Length: 513
Ligand code: KIV
Ligand code: ZN
Image (tube, rainbow, N blue to C red):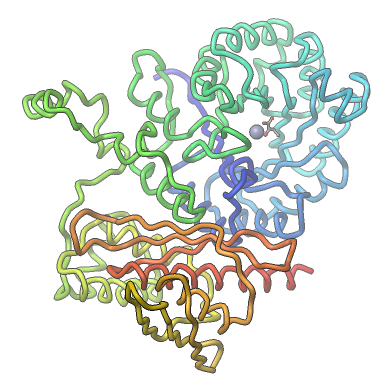
């Protein structure tokens, strides 16, 4: 096998900064642990100087990751680099990633700096970072619209100053595969020092070419690819990790390189991210879309029955999609449940297992058959749960097509039980309004959606709500998820989950100050 290609995941940084994808501390930790299971080589955990909360999150990620390199992104400013070091110094394998823009338009209008000053700053800051650690990545932001001779000069200087990875990003998603190949080959020709370090690429997807450009870069000598789960990221997103990993695995004849990704963890990583952010992937998304392995046409199904390879270039199992096997029922005990979790690749602590088993029993009571997808939904939801400051005790709703819906909701808040009544435009609206009265907050429901986890009339309903606080201009959007065979109950649980996230984050912000 040829050289090895490092996968640098930036879901927690470039991904997290895209609209609707922000994550709280618990969610970042959960995702980071999953990225380690996926076996990425580098986890970019955040932008250290963005806020004290971001710095803390990187620090916490650095503290729980056991083998993978943890990177912290910062501008080429002395204070920022100090913050980056503060955030990753606890990691087993820390990296500082520093960047400055190099294109004429960015240098003139954004940085208001001359090319000479940009070059001096880059060199000086790499030297500063080098005082802290050896693993330093330097990025030339907007590289694909930069002058090749200028890039060759700045790269030579930062490599001599100690940079060990040079990233040549297509920040605005402008280049094309052929152009990028030629561009990278030209830079390599003009900067022989690049042969001593890792060449990284970071391709945005504005023209839908993020993955194609990354693959072209590998052929031009790149040894590190920056990408995100489900392709999330600024604007149209970044190159999608799962697509790159599966191209490299499926087409070894064209790309004879070693890649460390455990592809069987792809589906779980994609689902966990969607579950955290509430941003679902389109059904026809390559690799992780609901239809990616579905064969609908009669001719295709006939072919598949004779020989799967007629229409299947990779197996669903290779990305971790299991057949949706019937696994357990309401008589299954804790042992059987735990055994099943282990075969599905989950390792839960004693407390997590106890909670998952209670949730499983709750589902199994209402649903005769519990499938692997139900278990995935139960466990992934629980893992990203925040402390339950408020908890649903019960609700009763009176509905009909000729009356106004009325909901009575009782919830536990601390050691008090509070009950409130509200009318509303339908049962869900009435219940949401009653919860608002209980928690004493004015909330705006930005979005509500319902999916089903499996097929069948007793399928689990999977509700997602997005809400923000009215009157608080700094309010984030909080995403709540709820599962139940009853869609009103699933919605109420999702709403309560979002409220708990809001309270959790408010407390975190107070603590950080
Ligand atoms: O798109 C980009 O150029 C970036 C850099 C900061 C690496 O995200
Ligand atoms: Zn980017």
